[in-house]
Length: 321
Image (cartoon, rainbow, N blue to C red):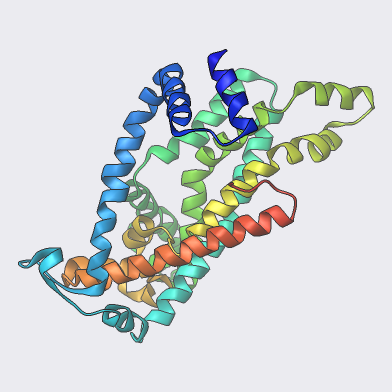
């Protein structure tokens, strides 16, 4: 009651500093267990996400391992000019954007379709089995996934390659085929991550009010009508949210997967910004240029998230905020 009285006084005029402090303290005491549960996550983000931001200074310096971040020479935007003037930059940017767009176009729909299929299955044990089978590959590392792909597509001993050579007499080498490299990345990514992506949509489907379906049945709506008018609108907000997040990571084309599948013959279509940064920053120890690329990606991602969120609101979605 005292808190309500203070809040009521605050609405009549400007609250004093003591009143604001009292409100904050009462809220902290009342919700102390919630804040305590938030504490590990907050500490994690502070230590691993905010503190390392100080390293962005490297992007504006000629970093020297001996002198450290603060002692290195300040060179302004020279590292950015090195990146943008590189003859490989446009190719890297093109490959990165194309792979990211392909992932957005072809990888989001399988998540929705699998969630809709699982939602329509009424036999619970069969539904759990299918969900476990599709969710299982998510726990495999990309090294294991590449090993599985190699066992099928290896030029000499792969199952598919051996069958093809027995049928036609020709050697099938898809792992070094430039035309097949991007589809290979997309197919393996769909196989690995679709089950996990469907779980998010299944959670959104579970939140839809069951009374809407009951009313639709009374009105004579079939399963397709229910899906079109109730199910799909029910997961629209989640779809838009994930779409905005993917737009923000459009310059992150999946470093781990690409780096493992990449080889010299497919550099023209498979080399992306992150793999170039890895070679430049780790193998050549040019940390300043690598940091400049990371800073550039962060700025572009931030702008894209803002733009996608604003665009989503214009089309009637609530967006992220």
